[in-house]
Length: 39
Image (cartoon, helix red, strand yellow):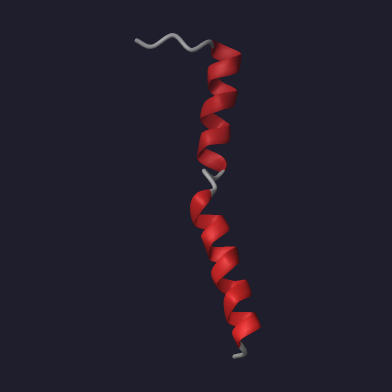
C-alpha cells in the first residue's frame, strides 16, 4: 500500500469517526416533529 493510499484511508476513517452519523439525524427529526419537550 502506498503512502498516498494509506493517507486516503486514514482521512476517510477520520471523517467517519468525526461525523455524528444517522442517529443524530433521527433524533433531530423526532425533536422537530414532536417538539423538544422531555418527560
